Image 1 (cartoon, helix red, strand yellow):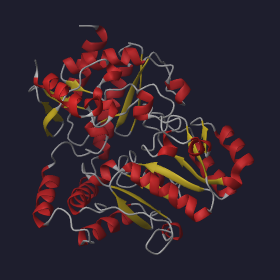
Image 2 (cartoon, rainbow, N blue to C red; image 1 turned 45 degrees about the vertical axis):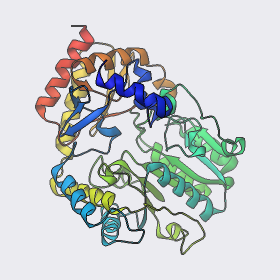
Image 3 (cartoon, helix red, strand yellow; image 1 turned 120 degrees about the vertical axis):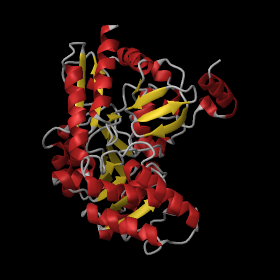
Image 4 (cartoon, helix red, strand yellow; image 1 turned 30 degrees about the vertical axis):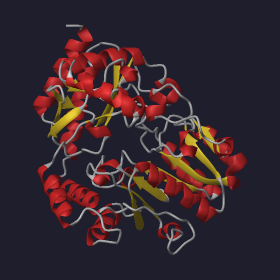
Length: 422
């Protein structure tokens, strides 16, 4: 029995399903899960001793690659000073200042420990500041596992074939309107009928949890206009896109500014840290100066803050974005020219191969028309050849600053062999 198989057997006895996040079970790709032992640069080594070229990157946080020396050193130094204090530190002030400087539409920011917490706080802020209850989200977008956002969600819920989670109160679900992504007409119909009840419109500016679905021209500006018209708070969930397209937010780069922004993944530098920020007048509703309560024992944890602050400073200093995007373009173009029934969608350093499609999907219905079975076959073939992709047809792959041209060549050679059945 391999070490990975033995570990999974042990895990299933003490952890539900053997994993601490469902997609790690590899059920969607009909494979046994792997267990990471170490990571360095663009590679991970499993407990079985296999070295894998990693294009999952822990689902997005590791934009600098595994075990970036500067980040690791910052974490070590922070841990030596103390792992947690329960009172404020200089480092969390510096990280908040860094975020506000890099994303000017964030006038104030609150640090939390996960993307789910960031979204939960943003929604509570929207409701508390508007006095309204209802929310508008988009089919297939994923905003963490807070109850209201698990209605018609993407990511792991979509991977598992569910439209919503069990255990969500019916009243919670009834307060959530769902529109198709890229469908402004549906949005305007909801806003025209229920705009006075809407506390927030929340969206991934680039949908990256049903595979990669790009916003059509005018869609996000249309959401900004709709929110302005009805007085709802516009929330951009940039847990994935924040600092992924450049040393700022997607909204800032594209000149469409939300009222609130949620950040995660990259902002924590591979540690459990996230943030919610935005207009000062909205953020001032948060306790202790306002009546919208949010708290956390480990919010602004100094070790996580050190990782996040160091990562953001490196991104500003080194500007790895053009090289990462160029390598992602090479991967996408390479897959699309193999004539294997794959449409690889790419933007910046993100990419998703959709099987059984000739054109990029515009929404969840079109995503579902692609073949998850063919993706699973491709995933297993690539893993056999030492390439690790996200183990789901409905997740996005990432190129990091640690990936090289040689890595891209290895990927494309493995893809050719996998698709041609060699």
